[in-house]
Image 1 (cartoon, one colour):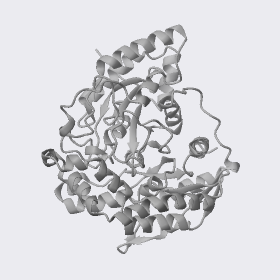
Image 2 (cartoon, one colour):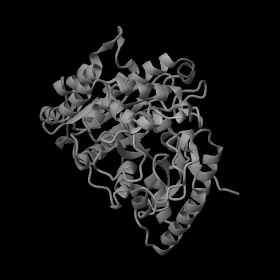
Image 3 (cartoon, helix red, strand yellow):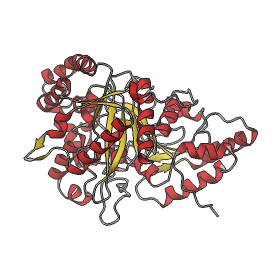
Image 4 (cartoon, one colour):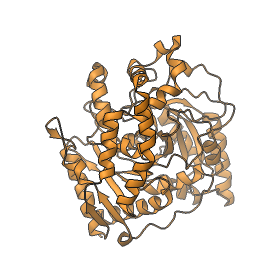
Length: 463
């Protein structure tokens, strides 16, 4: 009989318990597999045989005192865009459900295995990773676990990866982010998400949506967990870097975003704004320097996307053009198919303009920040109810755009970004903030995010 999985604060805590021989990684895995089987819509497939072999090897290493890293033996779930040898990569689509199994691991899967993590299965997602809401009519929609009274969306596209962590099926959910697909489900599930710069990790063996916007990263319970696992993805497992000192960290909150209105209503929901303001006050009390000002580059990015369109849409259409022209297109989720086809009419000059202005706006933001980090809400609202989105394609399209509105900024500019929970609203739904640095500054962002997490934890304990 499988033992009961103990409550745990983090993947690192599990790793420390394994190292101290207080927790058997094989027993831990069996608990996670059991939870995964009992879940609904969270996993598309389980790689139980591989996972058991990896957990047994981790057990032997722990007993011999020769572990491969701090997460050796910890169960990890991979979004079903990552190739795992011998497993079919479906991309959340029935079209690929009968494809040939992957002949080899994706590069990041192989490197994480070298750090001893246990790959337990492949998680559900929006079909082709093309929505910020997380609905999937083919494999079921994994429900947000934070409201038992009425089903709410999990956020997407990495819905299963986030819900797997939130429900204790896995300690880490590995995901991709093209317009917000790590940060949004992390936000709606009260978790931490780390979107890395697009060039930081190899995407070999990862199903593509957008060649220039796709990025990889983890979803977990803490910044520490994300940092430790992200290092595993690069094959450089090791200790945590030192957090940045509060006095050395400057943060710019773009207050224009907080103050705007949309159709006469607050552009940011009051609970999301209030929770962000509380987090800012806590950071300031701990010594962080927070400035409030309008960033012209952020405003220009938002205006450009509104006028020219979304670069990721053009690239997604190009990536899947042949599929859309085939008989198999009828098998796609109609909401996904409609969004992909809509990009076919984007004017060439608009797409070229998006490419040309991207580098200039990246440089402008870096100059405006002048070494500071950008702070924004992750999503302007908390998790919406599922039923209205299933009932109306128009409501789905409107809410999807509203959900992606603030994460698209960082994706277009290729900003490494942490999404961090800030609290809950009256319905118990989670809000989140995102902290970003210019493209390529992932290592500096890691140290800053560790410092932010430490400061918020210290403040919550009254220190």
